[in-house]
Length: 326
Image 1 (cartoon, rainbow, N blue to C red):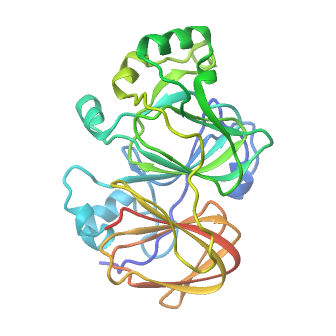
Image 2 (cartoon, one colour; image 1 turned 45 degrees about the vertical axis):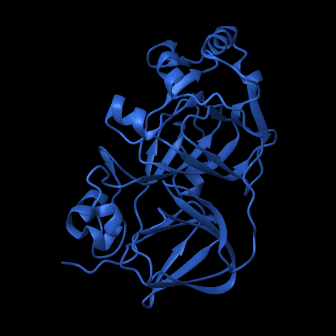
């Protein structure tokens, strides 16, 4: 059996009605008229398990790795959970147009309705056009009847918190909170491994394939929605170079932010969990047992749970360190 090593995966690209063209140059692809809305960077969603791009394990799927290596790859806490084959989905989102105003169910409701995990997510703004914004929660108290009327009138956006985007801003979007990504945003999204979305409003947009308005899911959404009010602001964090800048820890994922100038080392010998390193700025060079793993913006490096140490060097790089807090 091959020895595990830091893994890079082949991105999976998906057309979306609201997608753009910024992911083509980011991943060195020839431009096309076809818009791309999402690049799935690490996935074990059904039918879309990521495949290794380099080394002796090239072309192995993430599911094949899980089946073969188990706790060596994921850590015992994840591998021993019978209900989860892989808990996270890491993606890039290129929103040329507004995404629908939507909500995602929590674990309990998602299990009951879909035999799935719920969907709590985290956004890191990687790029924005002038005027780009995020909608994050209601700005006044609503109930299902009032919400349905706002959808009929096309004025639900007026009742949403709006915050303008800037590269480096971060947003935590728990399950149940209504939200939307506005057009002009390029976003790194870390989320639970789930693709369940209930649309509340979609700007009366027409699906070109069906020539019909895209389906809304108001009845399903009412049970999932958290109607509480939240302050309209991004999540703030420190930016100390070559240090751990703690960002967010919850039951679903743990994310820390690292700006690198020079060289630093990370020791994972006391951890029992996989780690995903995601480049969100500049260029990085990770070094493991004399092997080099360069990363550019949007690329990820998957560290198996049995990884003990890794070094990183860069003149101006930034990365997110993602795990589930084992």
